[in-house]
Length: 459
Image (cartoon, rainbow, N blue to C red; front, side):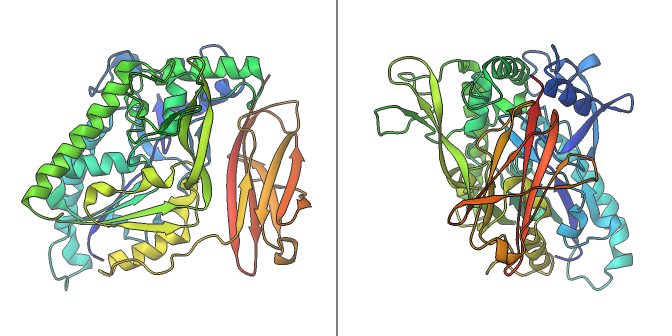
């Protein structure tokens, strides 16, 4: 309701990581792009950390929300949250709480940290709310809005950390409720295919660096898919990642067990609570369906080798089958035409939040993109070699098509010239310096927009 405390939980990458006032992740990301040895050392965690907080040199400060696009190659992207207050329907300063956190850590630990933060902030807001909403019908509770993997933290807090009675609503935005195929490929050392990435040598170095780093990150391990997400060539039945007959090569069994235990703990808590009665809070899940998303990992039938991923409908990161929040016992899904990385800044979120904060159920037609999508056949790409961007949409030149590319964090945008090569299909070829870049396409009549980020690696 309008007088409730609004708590925003960003996703993986969505909080800046600092040490001594320096943005450590930004520094490491730049080293990774430039193929520096030991690029991720400063953001590594010790083996076997589990649900404990890191100490000493492994501990980092995390509070400020990401403001510019960033990504972990082969895993996921985040476009940042510069306009999050507006997207949340402009809550007052005193009733808005951005929950920054160290996204490397276990979602269990982060749920406990969220519990402590919500308790403090809700006590503070209780003492102030009369000055702003003297005619309210009841005491304030919490509207918890969670982007991407932040939804894993939010739901664990509610169901496993006694947060159920504090919440009025849980709103998730592109949350991988049942995991990501990309996490399995990353932890197996195959996030960047050598024949589809920046080149065999660069891809091999990047895969090794990412795997060594991510194997000790509880958050990535807990993203492993728990739905049937593996297919063996020549076989029609899809299997789970713990299928002993066809194990995913390079994926440690310990990581698989940790991921399954994390999901089972949550499912058991939901089952226990459901036996008592319905959820005491409303759940609204925004998801995307207009962009191909990695859905199934494909294994070779003649040897232990990953040969690729099959795509399904989704938000470009989370496939529809993983985005569905079946644990609620209801149908809380609100489908939009936005990518995962953009959901927290989308008009669809503002439309939903205006209804939720007014005490109305969101629904109907949510604002979204119409008929325009960018596609990168390769990401990341190698500097020094042209790469192709494709754009799909109907009658785009007559709809005032505008396309730009810019380096993340820099204001200068450069136009991109697309040429049509098939009906409703357009292509551009670019060559840029190493770095993290963003491409944007916009049209009118009807309005539409799509943004994609691409990492350009030094050779």
